[in-house]
Amino acid sequence: MSETPMSEPTVSIKSRGTITIDAGHCKGCELCIPACPPRVLTMSTAVNHMGYRYPELYPGCTGCGACLYVCPDFVFEVYRFEQPVVTEVSERKQ
Ligand code: SF4
Ligand code: SF4
Image (cartoon, rainbow, N blue to C red; front, top):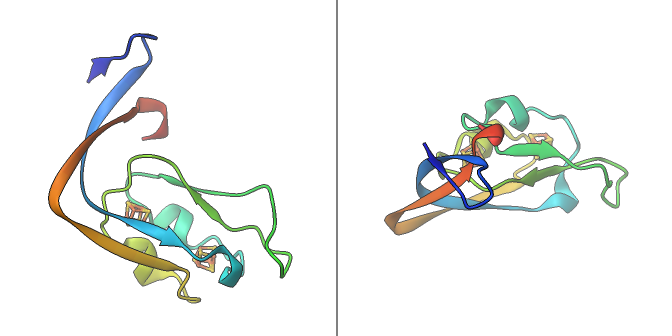
């Protein structure tokens, strides 16, 4: 754990990839929210063209792919980085 200039607690996350979210295909089932180990997905307040809320991504995705495997509507794509990337994210998001 380290401190930012604003003294906000942060943690280091090693990420092997990230995701894209095709919000237009989401049916709002929310299965992906608890499936995400670092808890960096949250449901939107806005709705898509079908009237469903959809997930939004906070910093700290590890590229684990859990959201991809749990989603019944193929909303997620996972991309792998060539080298792991370490990012500092707010401890409150963990
Ligand atoms: S699991 Fe898929 S369909 Fe369900 S809320 Fe998440 S992105 Fe939408
Ligand atoms: S790839 Fe893993 S860490 Fe990233 S949003 Fe999906 S479940 Fe969460």
